[in-house]
Image (cartoon, rainbow, N blue to C red; front, side, top):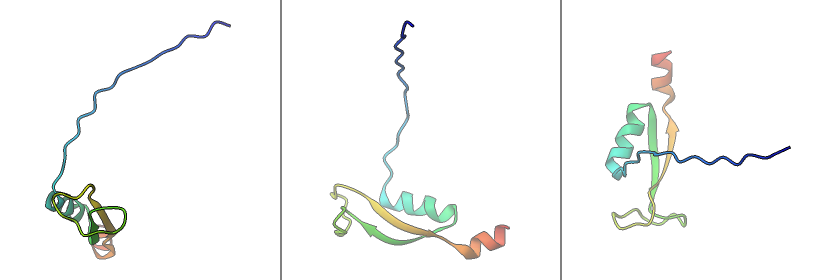
Length: 67
């Protein structure tokens, strides 16, 4: 055999979410936000932070109600 190389390009839409928007979306799907960091050294989140890191857990109460 002859090998055939294939490549593809996919367009993916992305939206940058604000901290408040992300927290709201997580709450809507049953998560509780526990911590928010602005970097991987657990620094305080500011709008100018290099990252938005959210630690969240599933809200078991909501899971039980929806079951």
